[in-house]
Image (cartoon, rainbow, N blue to C red; front, side):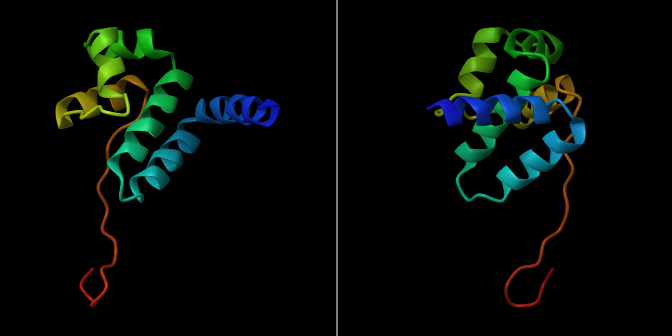
Length: 103
């Protein structure tokens, strides 16, 4: 458990850097389970201001943010964009190769 605490401390420290936070979310978006991305976004929000501050800056209640970023959360595109903006990040779409040749 001590190792987990050290890793969490290290991760939260790293997530304070916008570039690292963006790469962390990009890596989470590669997972087929959307819950992975929502969980990663929660960690980013906690590290980059805290849930109360991010909720206020996103124009939503703390309770709504908690629900949205829970394991059963289902954020809308509008609230997702607002939370990203409140953490100093933005959504960017890029292409990736698909098996079969079309990219």
